[in-house]
Image 1 (cartoon, rainbow, N blue to C red):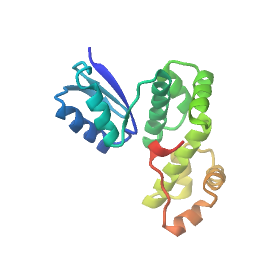
Image 2: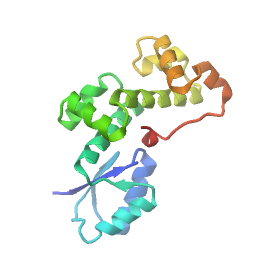
Image 3: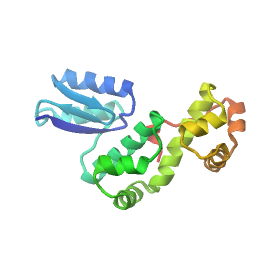
Length: 185
């Protein structure tokens, strides 16, 4: 059976590639890899500190505390859902993946991150909206539909509430202030 590493800030294909390179440097055979999670075949004990330091040097963090592991899993589910435009029923997907009820997850998330899970999801969705605007491939109604908003006006209100400007104003400035998904809290 493999040994699992949960890694904070591992949110894209480039991140996965960087971590694979690091683990191969220490002769680890990778059983599986997905966002935020790597399973290796060997025990970690001999190279644990070196891997931990190597990850830190690359801008990643090995997650060890149980509550932090849970929070990272929640974030990864949300990021994956939004990245894949699979945003309907995110909370139920989280509870299914984590195996805890939504109330317990929400309380732990708020306590740990200082923001509600709902607000975190909204912030990620707004970053996805910014990405769509930059790509200039969809109109605002299509963006709203992709992110499971009932109306484009609901999205517009949320966008303005979070960013302080309308989507049209954001589109015009073209000095886009985007955050990495793993940096949103």
